[in-house]
Every structure is written in C-alpha cells, then in structure tokens.
Amino acid sequence: MKIKVLLLAFAQLLMFSLTSHSEEKCHDGDFWHKWFKESQFIGFGNIPSQNQIANAQLDRANQFFSGKSLTKDYSKAIALYKKAARNGIHEANFNLGLMSHYGKGRLVSYQEAYDYYYKSALKNNPEAQFNLGLIERYGLGRPKNFESAFVWFEKASRKQVSLDRFQCKEIREGLVEAQYNLAQMYHYGLGVNKNLSYAAMLYELAAKQGMKEAQFNIAQILHYGPSEMQNLQKAYRWYLKAANQNVLEAEFNLGLMHHYGRGTQQDYVLARQHYLKAVQADIAEADLNLGFLYYYGLGVPTDPSIAFKYFKIASKKDLPQAHYHLGLIYKNGNGVEKDDIAANQWFKRASSLGVIEASSMLNDISIRESKIKLQPSKEELKS
Image (tube, rainbow, N blue to C red; front, side):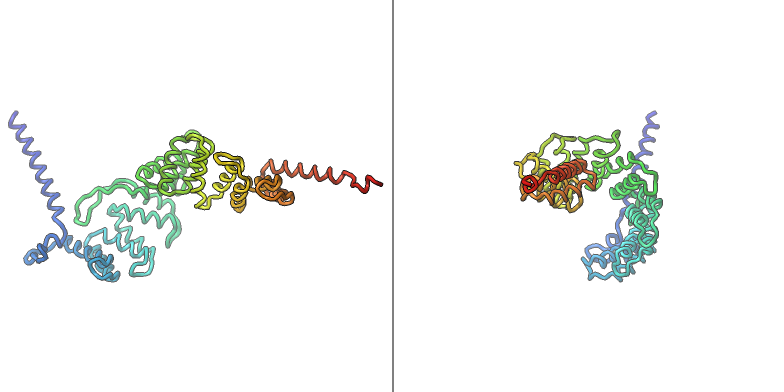
C-alpha cells in the first residue's frame, strides 16, 4: 500500500516537474533576453530559433513604430512586422492591421486591415476579432454585414486560449467592448433576433467592468423597458454610476427620477442639480423641466422670468409643453410683458403638436373674441 502511495506521489511530482520545466522553457524569454547579457552578445555557436528571431523583429518593429528607442519610422516598422508575421507572430499581423486601418505609414486600406486582422483573429486574438466585427458592422470598405459582425463580437466577448509571442498558451479574457457591441446587436436585432433579456445581461456584464455606456444602457432598459424587466431602484444606481463618469444623459434621467420620486425619494433640489448638468449636453428636455421647477416653484422660489428663459430654449427643439407654457406666460404677463397675440401664437404651436390644454385656451380666446365683437360699441348705444 505504501509503495502505491509513494509511486503515486512520485508520478505527481514528476508530472509537476515536467509541467514546470515545460512552462519555464516556454518562457525562457525573447531573442534579446536569451542571447544578450550585460549588453554583450553571447549567441555565437548557438543558432537562434525561428521564434526568437521573430520576437527580435517584433521588438525592433515596435521601437520603430513608437519612436521611443529609435527614430519613428513606419516603413521600417511595417517591413519588420511583416517578417515577424511570416515567422509566426500573430501579434505582428494585428499591428499591421492597425497600421492599414488608421493609415500609419501607408494609405488607409480597410481591405488590407481586414486581411491582417483575420490572420490574427484565427489565432484567437480578441482585439483582432473585435476589429473585424467593427469593420463588418459599420461597413468600412465593404457592405455592412451584421450577421458576420455578430459572429466576431461573440468570439471576442468570451474567454479564449491563445498563443503568446513566445508560443506559450495564455488565457485571453473577453473584451468588454465586444460584450457591449454584442448587447447592442441583441438590443436592436442586428444580425440576430432581437432579445432584450440577452441585451440586458450583456450590458450589465460590461457595466460591472466600469463601461459607462453599458451602465447607461442597462439603466435605460431597467427604467423604460417592458414591465417585467423594470427595476427603478436598480436603474437609479446604474444611472448614478454612469453620471459619475460624466454621462450627461444619465444626469437628466437622475433629475427625472428625483423630480417625480421614481426609484428614489422625490427631491426637487436634487432634480434641479441634475438638470443643470444635463443642459450642458444640449438636452432640451432638461431645459423644459428646469422651466417647470421655476414656473411652479418646485424646490426653488417661483420665478416666471427664469422659467421663460428655459422654456424659450426648449421651444427651439419644438417641445409642445414649452410652447404651451410660453403661451401661459405671455397670456398672464408673468415674467414678461403681457402679450395676447404672442400667447395666441404659442398656443397654436402647442395645439398643433397635440397639447389639449392649448387647444382649450385657443377655444376660450375664440369665444371671448366673438363676445367682444357681438357687444355694441359706445357710438352704437348712443344712437
């Protein structure tokens, strides 16, 4: 029995030592680490492997590309990346794709970029897969292909086993940007059947990794989505995270939630603070709601003159309630000089956009004007 245990332990130890040796050998280092010590070349008589040569080419290409150790030279970088790629470094193919994509050292060529990305993507490079998805989704240099974009985003979004530049296995995590784009595909039915539940799941996955756009989008689904998916308290928390990353649309929605007490406590003061931030993004609805606060004295003293300024800004975006309230201000002469003609014009605009109260105002004005016309003048009474 003891012999069996000892043999088993020895076998496990041997397996561990072989694995460790294999990993150690795999990570011996690149050409420069292996063949240079204290700036002295020690490689004579030792033929470098193809991978070591390829890594030396990649390092030198990176230096020419960045201009940190060598004078920046995109042409030399491209030549060396091509050599490294031919020697089996998929990272070099990806870099060549980037240079073609953004016109570094050559004219922009989406087709060349696609071809280089494709070679790298086949080696499970998530960045290359993601960029292929972008090219297919937005039709860069080719017709849009949502189905193909979906496939590439799906690959880039999940964990994969790849080979690093030393041909050692490494686990590559899914890209948060790919998860976000995949969520959008499900959200809007691009290249796949629309599925809001899958979209929400992927948005939340990306949101938890700090992506502000995903934080805002999951909040939108939880706020305005189907009743079975709504969770206003959770929506409020995601809006807050997005707002903390300067998403001004999230500020507007936080203002709404405090304004009407949905998902959080009703607080007009906080609503005003969020609306003031949102107007920086030219969100007309924020101007409209600030007008409401000042017109009705919610969290601030009633001030029709300030309300008038905000309603005027919102009216430029043709918001019906802005037109209607401008009509009220002119009709009552609060904050501006009373002007029945201007009031009538604003009521007409609001009525044409479906504001029932504005139609009622116009009807009252029409009746009042008819009565005035029917009343005899002083001259007629004298006669």
